[in-house]
Figure 1: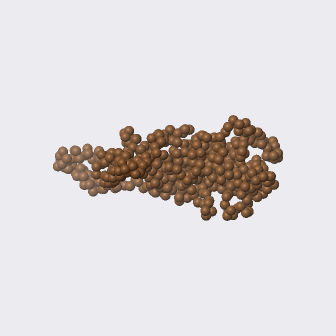
Figure 2 (figure 1 turned 180 degrees about the vertical axis):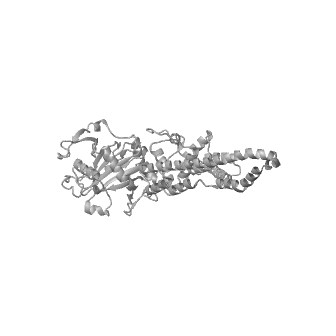
Figure 3 (figure 1 turned 30 degrees about the vertical axis):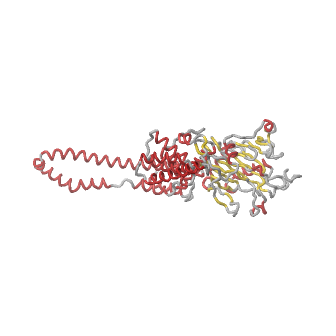
Length: 534
């Protein structure tokens, strides 16, 4: 393919992406960056070949002229006595050297620079780099991975191992620092310093690392360690003004603490340290510890007694004519609330077709602001999603019909098929699928979200479970299977036990699709019970 055709093709491909692509929120879309980088490498190679060709011509000219001038300078008059030599000297200086000058000035960078300029406007942004760094920190916290493990790339199920350099660790620490996250600043600056002390080649200086690390440690109230790190910094760079100023300030604070301690007026508090690291600060999520433990496969409340109440069976959708001959395999995942898994719900071909339809339309998944009702992006939901209609392709209508046959519920009032792809550390923290907001416009016309049918369209090497913190269940993705549960009691009241979460994807690429069935149209298909909690 000609270079200009390549550029036109790449431009047309990239133009389908949003200007603010937020690549880190979708592994599926990040794969396009792999091919973009591959094209840049090819373009760079072509530039190198052109430069090497040019240098080869210049080298050949220089070698030829070196031999000639060695001969001519040994006997200038004798050399010029030959009229042809005299003519060629004049010609060389008037014409040939000018041609060489043009060759040296020839710009071979145009093709590469043009390609790079076109593609750069579709590159990941500063927001993407920040989002990717925070994703690694999220994985670090959720799965209790120390910086050394992440830095060395020692993750389960990985096919292509990679490691972080001193510069990478320093960048992680800076991202945390700029976000006011001193907990992760300390962890990653310590890792950068450790690798630096081990002799790793880097352009980042120890002074830079210690500058950030000492201040972050100070923010935890660890005055003694902050002074120790600052003194180490000054020993490396005695002219560092900020470090000198900080050290004097720390010494004054320490002196005040000693005075208070001697007067016994105020008890000094030491920073809480666990396993050599500062205690992780609490955040906005009350069930954080339970949620993350379930993501790690810990704290699952599957007792032998409960296990005995779970069964496998063939499901024909209450003798649905379409399922009598080919019923689905149904497995109980949990007894109360009842959660079931269906096997072989979608074929590989159907999955690939739906992914193909969804990928160009993927956009950052949003949540509804509980105060304003306005859809907005949120850090606790990191994925991209798109909505598919039955008119988009027959396979969408086929999958919708299949979900209707399995559940016995109507899709006429259900929402469109939502397809989601999770990005780096992709997650959706604990949430309810049903609405608790009286101002939702769909509540009056279609009713609340009665039930959730969740299709797993990929296997996930590590992480990515669907967990229910309230009753301690964890369900792991299996390609081609689907899980189903009711969000509402038969009375229409929300079942608050169904608060669930999509755990961060540690290794792999997670694709799911889901259908939310609504109350309207299902009044007689799932009639009311006798009590409020039936």
